[in-house]
Image 1 (cartoon, rainbow, N blue to C red):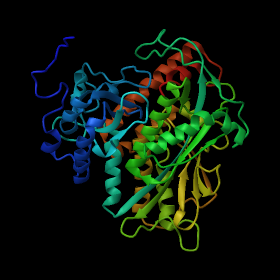
Image 2 (cartoon, rainbow, N blue to C red; image 1 turned 180 degrees about the vertical axis):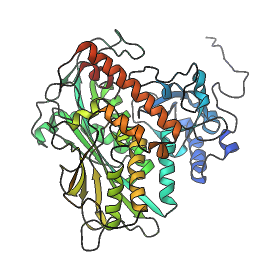
Image 3 (cartoon, helix red, strand yellow; image 1 turned 45 degrees about the vertical axis):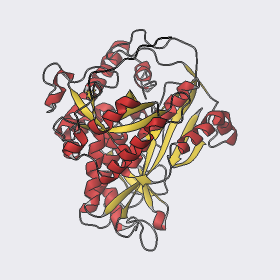
Image 4 (cartoon, helix red, strand yellow; image 1 turned 90 degrees about the vertical axis):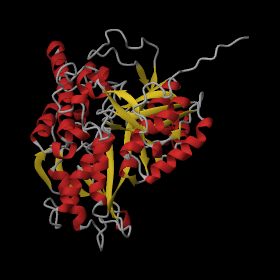
Length: 500
């Protein structure tokens, strides 16, 4: 049978950013260039490539490319719409991209494209059935080769560079809580959906009754999903440490061994994406929403374990002679506490995330302070000797991993850069100052603080507009519907349960 052979008269695949973009602007390290050569030599074993990046909300946005297209995109970059920078969590346009976006990035006007350049060090094959599909993260650039001002990954890179300039290496561990539910039959949620008008959330049922902490039988009730998931995560090279059943019905806690900062953020993005996709493929629904609107659910948190290593000798700077935490570790804690309010928005970025701050949930502390091995403290000092580190218990699992980690490391760095001495808040002491209690208060503290020094003015302005849009839609809904106080609302369930 005759089959037509289609061919293109163009030498480059459509949507390619710019010929030799990487080389022209010297965007790769020698390590990245070597990795790219290895990728090119193995592309015949791949069918499709997903080129992804994290939007300001920490959600993975991607395009799936054929291998032939990716051969060109790898070194030339790819045009990508600025839409992910424009829309809030409910896909309402928060920036006036048809006129002046008002954030100091002219390229967003008209929803203009930026160039997304693959980072060869993140290339890996996804362990899914079907076409052999690879995943690779990209870095966002303007057409002049400069990092995009709204790139969250670049913010974290800049913070890590500050540490490297002083021969320091941050070390972080992930501890993430999330929910696995069984998806029920029902409409796909498109009715009434639109820009800023989210349709119905997925209908689900709990996996078990819950409220038997770490009960082996409860883990066994989800093991048919979580144990194969663990093997999949290990196949991806993620340094999985443990999976356990938490208190809530079908509430899972997943922990990972310590990693370097950028690897930690990349791992969090890939982990959340793979968990949700794997669940959906098997008829389940996974959500990292802090407190879903499901009977008897308990809040989920993201606890970020942190220490700092001397790059010249591998010594943990938080380890004190004779036990406890060192003065440098205390200074790091001081930095976290002093910036806790104005950077809270980067750790708890949603309306729903502040449900954890309620008085009903004693293990979600709100007062600024630290203590040794005390899970009711905002910052817990954990371990001893070379393993001494701190655990910040503030974050929610939906947070943008690059911005959450960058905020923590930047605040800690500033604390260590001051005169090293005893912490202003000794162990067990809490101040009367509290974290913001809702998104509005967090946004106000964010605007009044020094977030722009960390993020740059364009990204700080963009995040403020995105959160203003999200908050105003929520408040308008509350005014119209008058829901009962203290309960997770239908609006929150529609806004976050499926997307996050």
